[in-house]
Length: 367
Image 1 (tube, rainbow, N blue to C red):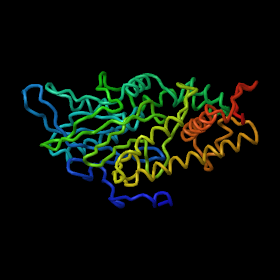
Image 2 (spheres, one colour):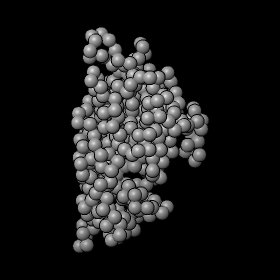
Image 3 (cartoon, helix red, strand yellow):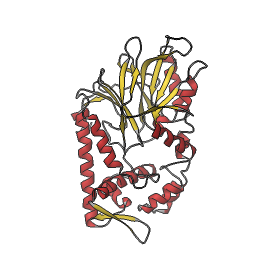
Image 4 (tube, helix red, strand yellow):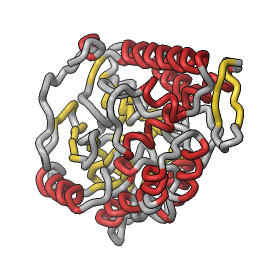
């Protein structure tokens, strides 16, 4: 545990859900942890006991569960879900699937889950922000930001010109659809301030949607004031800083400014809130973690300004400034996006200026 983590409190200690099992965090709220084939090797998913109107019987209620986030589409993930269905649902169905945002580890199996639990009398529907729904639809049919010709040209224009890397990025045109092959044909829209009633047997509680930007197009976190619980998705993680990137689909985004403003929206929440993150362990100390993240990015911005003071820098030039470890190609694409997010924040603030060189590469220098 690093010194920043030591400032947080983990009520469950080192306890983790076993594969195919869950841990109950509160009555009717279960934590699932599924494996990912990446350096970030897991994702947390949540089961919330729920009930919904029975369309075939006026006044009757269907009993079941709401799922929050899904994991990527692959056989291992489906097998983990089948184990959950067999042992963790008390014989009840999945009634709806809430997805915090469009990244593959969150939405990859949404189509499969919705199809798996839709019956003649009840449609298991996807609930997600409109922006992320449509971004996922586009991504599952092509690719955005993660590979292909557009991404290769974009990264090259910001200094990643190594021929081998460029060719590998160009060849990753199927990266997103390989993990999100399809998304449901319809959805229920989540948006900032929307309140969803979740629960069963007289324990139905309000969960308020809190939108966030910079990490995904329109990320939705869920907060229950009665329980002092925040399902933070990727917006607030306890151990690592959330990836905040600029990609080819929105090449002049100010993602970092949006992200920092978004996490401050959690400051009015109760100081004793239990935060349920998508990666890492449930923790208390939300306000402390937000202050840590703000300080982290202030430090990175200062380092970027210092580098650009010494000489004009492309995003590729900033990589060794911000990331002092060896990066593989997968990590490099995220790192390039993150370097650009910091450069753009300073550019939009007027601290840096951007010029396109004769070699076709954008470089930033002190204004």
